[in-house]
Image (tube, rainbow, N blue to C red):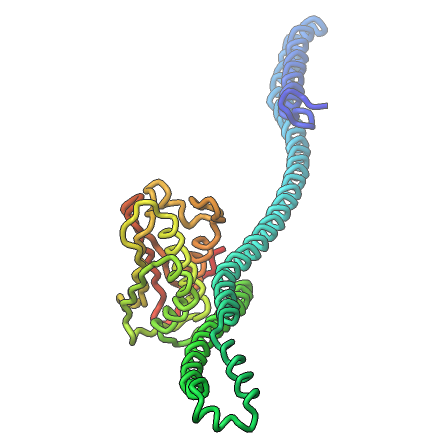
Length: 383
């Protein structure tokens, strides 16, 4: 049962003080009684004085004994309280360790969920471009003008051995040579178109593989630093969205330093640029103020940084949203998830770089600035 102090043990200090007071009062009472009674018990005045002197002399000694008893009692009480407090502290520490373990498990689950979400988001971005390429290939094959070749072949087969004479004397035969020449030109055009789309498709598949490799590298903090040309990475990222930008009639301006080199993890830089280009495209697609539809990408070296700026003429960013833009799950789009920019800024930090944004407000567009080290640096991974 707890006392008034809230502890599960008695208040030792209070009890000790009470015992000490009782001892002092008792001893003083005995001395007082001795002083009062001794003169009555003896008629010898000198003897009485001697006894009273002895009793009075014993007073300090008895007080000292009382103090020793009191202090010993206090020490035992303090030991008891220390033991109790230690047990209580150990119990509290155990509970804190259990809570910390639960929080760590929750953080690991949240991190795994965020990682999986990031992979799905980034792969989803690339799949949009892949789907466009597949659709373009299907449409090209379905609408191919090479179907006219079947009619020409049938006509030639019908002539059999008379084919040379048919070509020489019949107007239809004379037109065959010109038709075949036109079909050859059509074949070359369609083959070039299909080749381009297949390259886009291959780039998309490779980028999806790089995304998975990049996420695995991030999980182990085992980034592969390499020297690469920054403008080439920018152009590879642009290729993934060239069809999507064309469909939305978005003008693309590249102002690149063709000699700019960086030394860091190339797939991660590619991933960041793809997210930023996708973000710029979405900003223009959702803009309602009209006007120029344009994305400008610039690259240059600034001090020890390889800097890439992506500017769009899209919907712009409200000043109240700027400080939240890179937060996990924050989005202003109805169909958005708030993953891309969050993962991009974390990826930039992993490389020892930075990612920032500037916008003068709604309807004014935005500029994202990525800075990555020209020389590889070691940065603490930020999750």
